[in-house]
Amino acid sequence: MSAIAFNGYGVWAIYRFEMARALRTIWQSLVTPVITTSLYFIVFGAAIGSRMTHVNGVSYGAFIVPGLIMLSLFTQSIFNGSFGIYLPRFVGTIYELLSAPISSLEAVLAYVGAAATKSIVLGLVILATASLFVPLHILHPFWMLSFLVLISVTFSLFGFILGIWAQGFEQLQIIPMLIITPLTFLGGSFYSIEMLPPMWRTIAYFNPVVYLISGFRWSFYGNSDVRIEISIAATLAFFFVCLAVVGWIFKTGYRLKS
Amino acid sequence: MDSADLVDKRPVAAGDRSNPDRLADAPAIVSIRNLTKTYASGHQALKSINLDIRKGEIFALLGPNGAGKTTLINIVCGIVTPSTGTIVADGHDNRRDYRAARSKIGLVPQELTTDRFESVWTTVTFSRGLYGHAPNTAYVESVLGDLSLLDKRKAQIQSLSGGMKRRVMIAKALSHEPTILFLDEPTAGVDVELRRDMWALVRRLRDNGVTIILTTHYIDEAEEMADRIGVINKGELILVEDKATLMKKLGSKRLTVVLQEPVTSIPAGLEEWPLKIKQNGYELEYSFDINAEHTGVPTLLRKLTDLGIGFRDINTAQSSLEDIFVSLVSTRGDHS
Image (cartoon, rainbow over all chains, first blue to last red; front, side, top):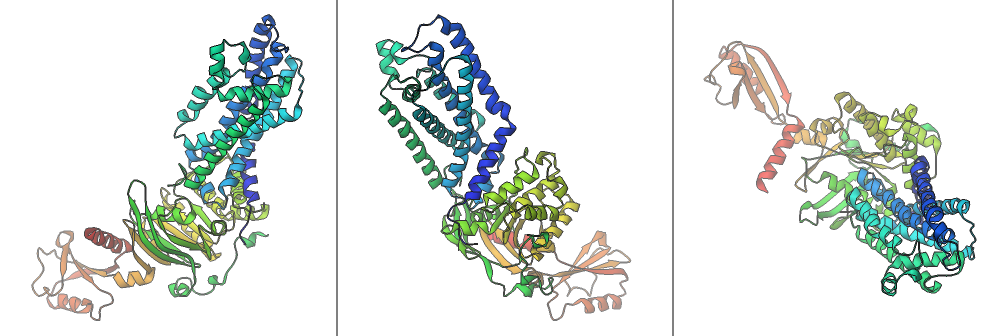
């Protein structure tokens, strides 16, 4: 057999394998986040939201939709991205990936592609769920989808890095729990940065998640805490940083090869 | 592809399989040159390994635990990066031309690492895809059939016995039609009957044209199966030899004479033979070189008769590969 330039069957094999696992654990993959999001709607949207005024001209229930989607997108992308590569490392089946005629880029494409696909589907399902609770309108559908895809891919890449770095299940969970979730909650998922006192507002601008949520919310309602160009630049920057780290991992074999 | 085409049949199959010379002129299918590996911890796992594996042979890599067997296999398969050296597998450099080289190689690692929740079929077809091959139901079925796994193809791997899991791993390794198969300790922790099955399977694979490199620390396994044997110890390949030559070259035989009456010391007149007293004086043991011009056996037996020392039985035994191996490893070990 002559040398193959691109191992498409290999990429497809991993992608399909990962997707099949998600389908097998559909309850864990999809139903749980949907239930969690619905609970947020009941608590924040119906119970508390009914006593809140509009935020930037949008009802509170509708205002939190982009933030809620982002919250699930971040955590699920990281979870999917990290679990996909951590599990073979943990079980030992990684030997097969390392000895297969598949390039690093192809492996990343497959694992991260599968993780991101799951997140995108999840984001759309949450969006559909939200539409049952609040009237939704999306001003910039193209940008909404672009953010959805880019952020899913970026956080899946981030998860992939985590899955390679982690040396135990605790480490796998510690970053999402201790860093990502707090940053998301403090990053304007449930409020506008404008609602904060000036000092906290300044501090909030150091939180990268603010830019992501703000950009995503802009695609829905046309108003944002930060300029949309900055949001796009921040999202792309995070994407390229993750990409560079993954490139470095495969070049050096970090935690994969001795 | 029909099931008869499990793997490409090559002319190696012709001739007498028990004759090691049939492979003497076979070209090298794996060439390892100046291979060294020093781990980050400073541990030197391999010290300048040079080895050619001949096409169509079963090569047994023998060595104690920690000798470097798995490191060597993992480097050839691309799992571990070597410190220096080159490897060519079926004409392809395993780093520069890694896709082509790796697609020729199948690996069955020592540990039973499987996706326990997957079915046999899913995991084997996954491996085939991962190695860049288009789906081929007939071929995968033939591999599973050959490994007696066809009726288990829908079973979850976790429901299978240890022996079956091992076979699933072999099926995964064969799923992409490799010409070279590495078996790392294929019978570790496997019961006697399964070992026999495994040996038969390995021979069948070899008969189908697959070159097989297996590591083992069971001497009898190498003795039973291998065409050639390499002994590795402390990262050094201390010997590579045809099994039969090795046995002939280093083999000695033991003659045991079972006496009618026990003796307490070597009887007078038998001093010229280096005899040992065994079994509380009921046996005399004499070691001799089978290749020597005069083995000393006939004269010893005559002398016993002349001296009136009655014996009930005599038997001879060839020293096993184990004896050779132990003497090699311990001798080299003393020098290092």
